[in-house]
Image (cartoon, rainbow over all chains, first blue to last red; front, side, top):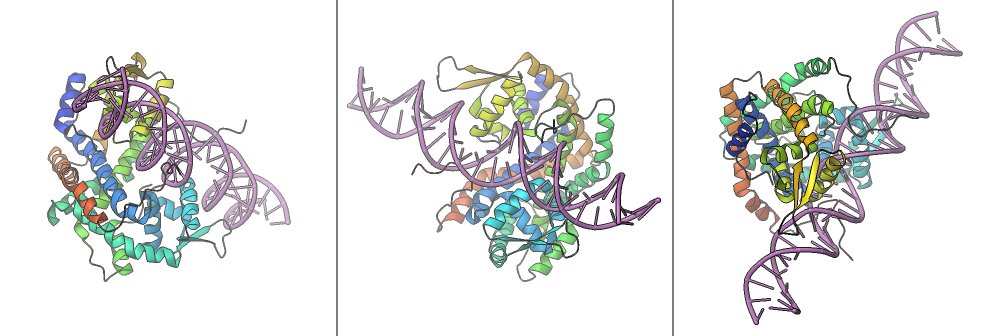
Length: 190
Length: 190
DNA sequence: ACCCGTTCGTTTGGGCCCGTACGATCTAGG
DNA sequence: CCTAGATCGTACGGGCCCAAACGAACGGGT
């Protein structure tokens, strides 16, 4: 599910594949392990707690944001959940259909939509979140509390670096070539 | 894009939301930062190197596996890439249409399909991978090499724990309640 | 040769995901 | 007022994603 070849084995194959290209091994090991760990943790939670509650990862994330912060504007929920506003429209509709989420108009700004949990949504989160947190603790249970904090700090510094300098970096990389559109996305009106 | 509220702020809101439930804060911080970092890194790479090459994250992962390991059976590629075999069928078809991937029958086992890169695929990877690796190095550039190794080790231990005990744990959690089907997935034949 | 359980990759259905286009709405500046 | 620009959530198109169902192919046992 996460790959059965070891990091060491992979690095060896990479060096064999292009021994001339200078690799940054430590950074590569750290970053590629972020993907592996994220996928493994997500899969564990999806196949245990979330499956039991019949929630997808994203649906849970959306409910969690609204649960913690209370009634929220959709753009903020999308931002916090790390999904596009277009995606949120669909997820929110699904959750509304299931009677877990409520959509309401803003009192003074007619463009805004506010999301809040229904009583059923509140009940679900009160039941699911403790189980979710228990599994988060389970996956990290081979690490001491100190090691968890060290890990969290290293990851936080990567996130902080990208928030501070990511956009600038992407601009630099694109300088010269026009920004090709990502595959997918609505076609021009013509 | 990754959320503008701090971890500290979030934890405070969580405690306010359910002060009675005992949280495991260190583990929670470590694990939730894994999601944040993974999403931030993936988004950075998708919006720079991969966008320039007109590749999605998954498509790149599939090409990378075949590039590093050479002609491979599809089930192994899916396993290593961390996607289901059904997903791989679609991704491989897309890449085949674009002339980057080649599909061939196995010499003796008629069930197997072998994937390999076309010359165009080889050329693309030789150009894209160095840029990809450079961005992996960029995102971790605030960490020393030692810190990268510490980070990689912590993440590796989480992955190892899940590989060793994840399945068993999920069995324990399901004991008592029948395993509800994940949302999505083909309906039973009835 | 013929079963029969196993293992492939593919199909299918439901859902997530992004980025562009779009219409409704708000807000400044005249 | 009124109009130009900004910003909101939604519609849409293309692609990814999973799990169950499926048919082709394998392989051991008779």
